[in-house]
Image (cartoon, one colour):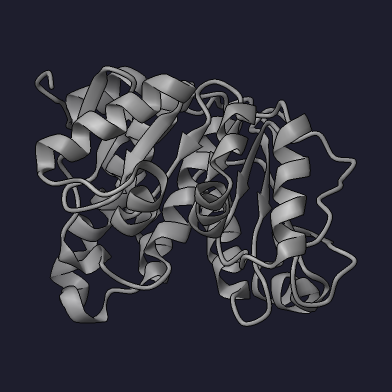
Length: 283
């Protein structure tokens, strides 16, 4: 494996697009977050809120019927579409035109949900971020991977990665298998961990921000929101992944002196995003 490229401030400055002072919400991108099932609507709440807080102009959440009030009350700035099923997603259909879509947080793996994911990825042409249960659904149906558009972003944690690529014997073996998987399907893989690595075929990036505070429920849902937001704002998928993991880690580095490892939760990632962006802008 070649030497990884370290994701530090210099790498981010090269990629960062300052906001145009004359912009409006229509130019800042519209993201769709397909997420949630009964008891796991929090994942949809966190991902969609974080997507807005990362600069996206408009965010719509697509959730089961039982999530309607939860989403509308918890995130008044987020628009909400609902599935016909009460407790899980069974048929992904919408008439909006998003610039980026995320699918998977809190989705569950009902048979009807699996079919809905298949039918969606078969026809979808919008840049896509795949996380959580959508990854688990793909690992149960590996022939569906060929349906994904080039440079689709996958954000697996170690167990989800193992389900996708199989067990590995050493760290080097894990990287070899992930690189081969990325090349086979033309995907960008965000290998979540300490530290997080990003695999874009032969190129490997190693993140330099973040700490143990990020090992908390909902942390991955929030990362999905950040990356999807950046894609919707017309960042290239690899740049969105690189910038997204850097920002995500940076929030924990900035917050730690004020929160401690123990009391930092996923909502704090969202809370500290402003300071993370400011630290990039104030070179």
